[in-house]
Length: 147
Image 1 (spheres, helix red, strand yellow):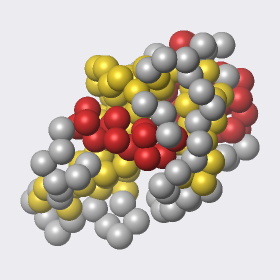
Image 2: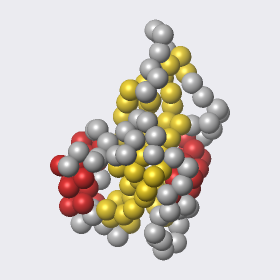
Image 3: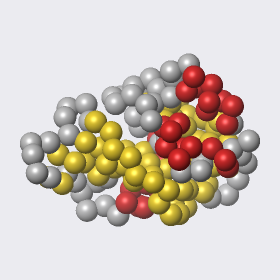
């Protein structure tokens, strides 16, 4: 679903799932633009008329193989879309249903895994974390949930 705003570029509604389990954060390595090859919160575009929470659960399942319960909105970010326009990404706090298995990369994710705080910070310091992810996680208090 694409919503038009004044001007020539679309605003594209997207969702992300912030999943913390046992002090670790779920991240995926993006397989496609934007940020191909970099680690980020799993997520993607909403389908037409899709409820954001349903879309978040769908994206997590597609990208990681994990079934999640989608909770409250933790924050919203805007990112430039590769072909023009803006991705408007609503990020939701999610919980894995049952014991958290190892994620399996799927859909447009090249890899997926659980990361402790030091791992997330190391990815960022080596330029391997998608732009803005560390700042958003810190602003939303997510880093404080990690060991």
